[in-house]
Length: 94
Image (tube, rainbow, N blue to C red; front, side, top):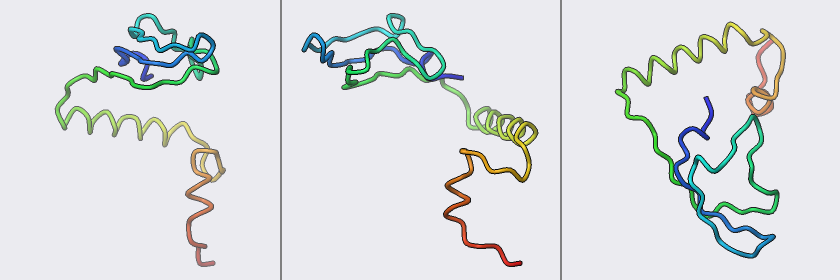
């Protein structure tokens, strides 16, 4: 899931043109680790429209994501996702 599908409006400062613009979400391209914004664009405000869900539905979604992560990640190997926990965790007793 990506946040781009929930973006309804973005207010940004376009440094190249030295002006402030407001774009609708459907005017923006969202791709994996990339958007249609210029490198010198600065987001000033974003309006998101999030779906309404019950607590039970949200918790079930979290459970499913956690289970997928546990079954797909290599066991016993460090990754960027756990490096901070690894560095900050107290040493284990031998």
